[in-house]
Image (tube, rainbow, N blue to C red; front, side, top):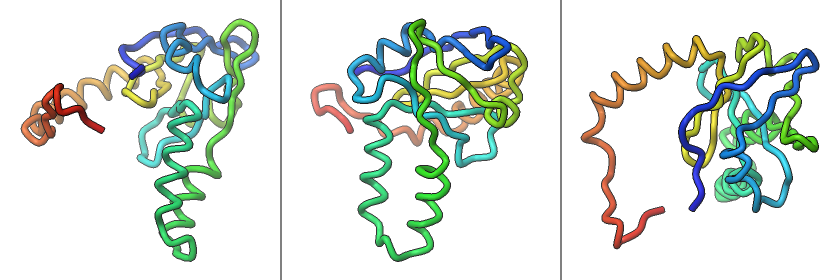
Length: 156
């Protein structure tokens, strides 16, 4: 299984184009859409989230298991699916970030891509440093809650 791992800082040009790190493009190479799904996270974090098409399909499949006549379903579908934008790769492996996305994440010439397994986040590098320090503190407090799966058993 290919995962988004590590973090990489890339320049954003004046047109809003940013190169998706090659290691992240490698994860996306077998996806049905040649690009990235970009959205603001459900949380109030000042970043963007990037998804491959298979992860977007997984989210949509989870929504399909909900009663489609409920407010809960509609709220999640609106907040997630209606907010996702497909950003295709150009010939150089770049995506275009629009002004609203750049503003929402507070990006100013640089974008830090942070791998999070099946998704990644795009951060202002300074804000990410703060987020990472806070996340490490919380992770230390909650590490005992992580379900541990034997590699022979597999996991999903």
